[in-house]
Length: 455
Image 1 (tube, helix red, strand yellow):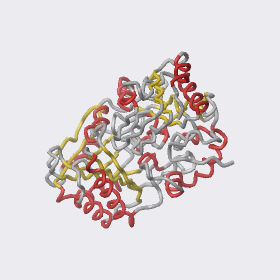
Image 2: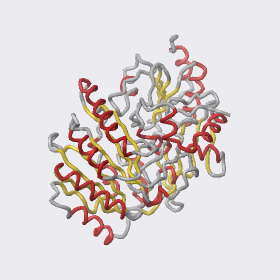
Image 3: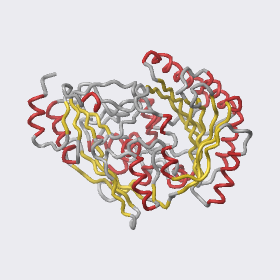
Image 4: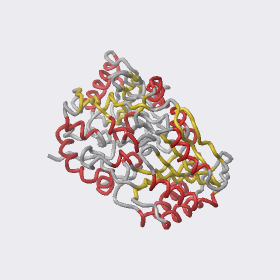
């Protein structure tokens, strides 16, 4: 690749953020993403301060013949927010949240994290569906679906999206809403960044908190089958007010394997206490951290389990039921986990998120059921082979129990091709290809679960 320095020097006179070439000491920090298993080296990192910088970065990349990756929160497990020898458009300096409490709306910049968003909206006792790890980016999570504690009651994050500002491949800026560029608005809600750089988002807010009921209860792993059967029973009975997650994890001592149920209840306090008591009173838990807590704490409760820089490799699939055979396969797989950081997570989908028709937004995973994630995580590069092998073997052992759908945001770097596209986009793929052809005919934005443009 030719020396970019002269081009970058010229761009810097018009760019308000930072332009980092590999010889800049800040480049090595800026290029890194949450998943330490991803080690890509961009030719240039453009740290944008606003939409004008994003426009300049997109046009610069096209003029210089550079491929583009877009970084919001940097949490994508597949490392799709960074790139080798291309331009990383880094939105992380673009972090603001403006709350219109009277209209129950909030606008967030493309680099905003969910912890920041929740902190600002909770000043007014308001919230929208967001990530369960507070350092996750608002943008990436929303564009790919957006599961969170509030999804049974208020739908996915993208179901609460009122508008999104997008910088297109030609450098133009458009606002996509139900009334402006409605085809792009449909596609952005589940299309995973295939159509441009989402520089800001506007969300609908709901009355939530500041105090809610929820938390986590855990039991010794020898009760795992019983715990997952209880979880299945609770899930089948759950109202829209209750979100449930089960997990097979290792305790803080890095040795004690546990089975856990995490929950959040967003209805009447008395009803919440009764619902959660069924979890708290089951057997003899070794951890009981469930009760009243701030909504912001519920959303940060799992942060320590997903440290930045840990090496991650994920495999996930959706199944409509969690039968005893599936439970046995998951427990047996977890008992073979080679790292104390590895987990198996089961997220229940029901309520408002599942009552939206699959073709109403580009996001097509609207069935009730269980999203199963084999989350392999470790610290040392020497464990790379065993970490990947465990995830693949565990995923294969669960294959007889899965359906046809997969959650877009959990697809790892090797989840590519027609199978991944069909599983992620379902019946919406053909329409997405036509919209891609309209807004990005040259497939400039392809560092994603890529939709090829077709007229």
